[in-house]
Length: 116
Image 1 (spheres, rainbow, N blue to C red):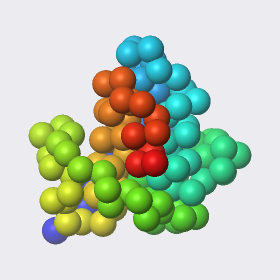
Image 2: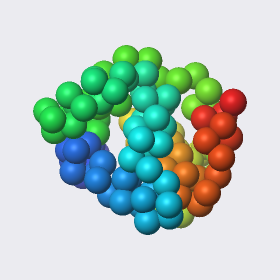
Image 3: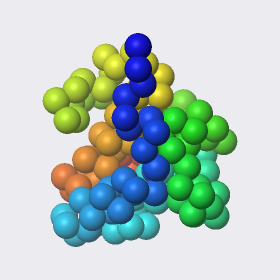
């Protein structure tokens, strides 16, 4: 079976869309970055390096320093998909990120987004 196109898409190509979605609702790029760092274990410098290298989504998540174990607490629907039911590991990580950015844009408190 062929891989989904998102796997080979540069994370740097989609990142501005995450930021725009958040900013449109009064949130910040810094909050988007905090979510990504929480999810992947990247430092800000590592995140910026990945964006500069235009790393694809599959590599971005497969080589993440430390995927947060609390990410399994992320539940709900994003893009019509229930994230907890996604079976393919990389797609699940992508949907987790989509859901977190969605929660940010919907005005959820950062403590709740980061499952504190």
